[in-house]
Structures are given as C-alpha cells and as structure tokens.
Image 1 (spheres, rainbow, N blue to C red):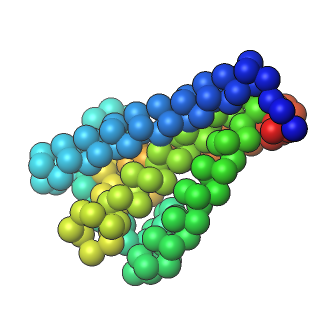
Image 2 (image 1 turned 120 degrees about the vertical axis):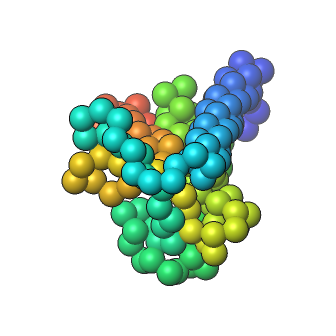
Length: 162
C-alpha cells in the first residue's frame, strides 16, 4: 500500500509529539528527582494534603513487588518497546500525547533503576495524605493512562490503518 505525503507527514508529526512529550517528562522527572535528592532531608509539608518526603521504591507502582528490580526492568523494557510500536500507529494527536506521557514516565523510572546508584530503586518524593509517595514520572504514567482510557471510551483511540 502506498501512503500519501500527507499521511506520512501526519505520522511524523504524531511521532514527534510523542517523542517531545516523552522527552519533557523525562527531563522534568530527572530534574525534580535530583533536586529532591539534594535538598530533601526530611518530610516537608506544603499545602493541605500535599508534601515532600524522599523515599526509595524498589518495587513497581504503589511499592508492589518490592525487591524485584530485575523483573521490573525486564517488564519495563518490553512496555517501552510496545509503547513505541503503538506510537507508530497512533491515530490522533491526543493519543500521541497520552502515549508520550506513559512512555516518558516509563523511560525515566527505568533510567533510575539502571543508572542511579540506589540498587534498582526509584526516587519518590511527592506525598499526599492517604496515598503512596510518587514522583513526576508516576504522575505522568497515571495521567497518560487515564487519557488513553478516556480516548478509548470516546472511540478516539483506534490505531490508524497504516
């Protein structure tokens, strides 16, 4: 099947959006984690239920599977590869943004597990009352997943026919 120049251009734009969003998430997450590591020496209350407190999470979301960093890294690598494939077939700009949020969060947390010197743990530092401590990458993954769910419910997340 031959694709038109407009289709190829649209595909490139959606891939660029996904990559740009992912890169922004990685940058924001890594900068905020570095600041937290350098400046957070104890719990800090900010406003209402919001606070900051540095912790290290060797598990997955909500500290599930703590101590299983090797398995988590393997699953994250597969997830990143799958998200890359989904990004190639993204049918909308909104879906490209959602995939970028999830991809950026996954890549940033994966980078922590592989390259930071905390024995495969991820730095978490944002606290909310009655909620597990999290970071910018975790928030991005959550927002991206909610956006994907909304797009699916609205019928706007079907892959393109490329």
